[in-house]
Length: 190
Image (tube, rainbow, N blue to C red; front, top):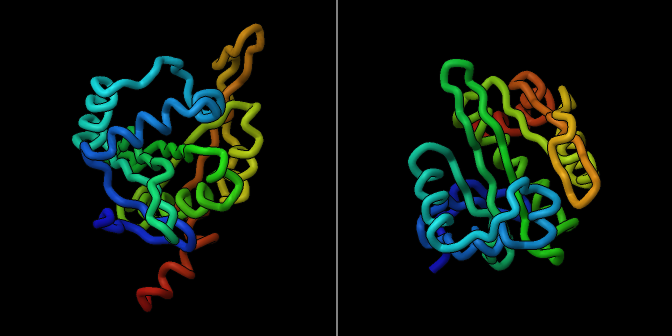
């Protein structure tokens, strides 16, 4: 039996994470390309620290498994982190494992579902995320989705003898609703 579909997009669906997702999280976080493109930590994920991370996500954050819609295969995760209920803001993160799953629209679709959840279900006013300057594919995706560059953390990632900046992007509710809101609200006849 497959996981319960929390949100469903065109090519992906999101299910809520639980402790049975530890192997997936270890696979995604130990994916060599994910480590270079998205993670600043270089430690290998093991059962103990993965279980602790999943427990923390379930208790304090919003975490989802990204599945391919056609076959239900779990291919990554999408997270809403650091929620600030007073200022109605949060950070977002997404990772898709396996080169066979990248460049196929899965990340775009999953991020659109995450944005929908953030702005419609959680009623957030702003969300933010970041990518290292060399992760041009992610930066193009985020900007194509409507995120705006708002800053940079200089010298935040060292790989060998090279030093890179982290680009920070955000989106506010008015921008989301301008881009996607009409279509979403039409579904509910609002």
